[in-house]
Amino acid sequence: MELRKFTSAALLVAIGTLSAHLVYIPVGVSKCFPVQHAINVMAGVLLGPDYAVAVAFVISCLRNILGTGSLLAFPGSMCGALLAGLAYARWQNLSLAMSGEIFGTGIVGGLLAWAVAYLLLGSQAAAWTFVPPFLLSTVGGSLIAGLVLKSGVLQQRLKEGK
Image (cartoon, rainbow, N blue to C red):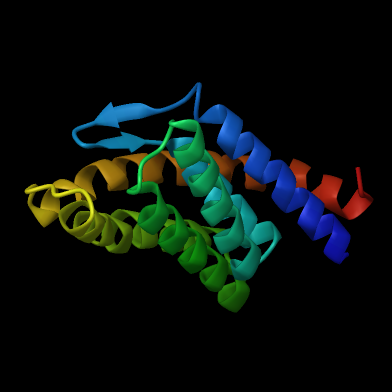
């Protein structure tokens, strides 16, 4: 089972990294990346909070190395993945996992992104300027993940080992 989780995590990292070239929405100082948020929810539900955070971290690293991301990708994606995974692990409820992603990325991640931008990037933007674009992106991505997970295709494939 651990090899299956590791392989699934690697597949989510590949999808997240490659899709960064195709699907992003520039909003102010940030790049909204709804696929990342969909992956956060899917990883949290299917693999658990530890794998979800690891997937978010690796995608953020690779996107930064490839020039498709910024340092702002780290706090949003990792907080959202953690809260999505913890919510699902505790309550086994997809809506709560989606809510964990939305709160973790949109609110907590948005505020931490401001700290990163201020301390590391020298930005003078107000803290509240990061929350709306992060919320917009995470709501869209969470809804996508909810639709995919409700269909049951991914869970069935993981159980079958296909």
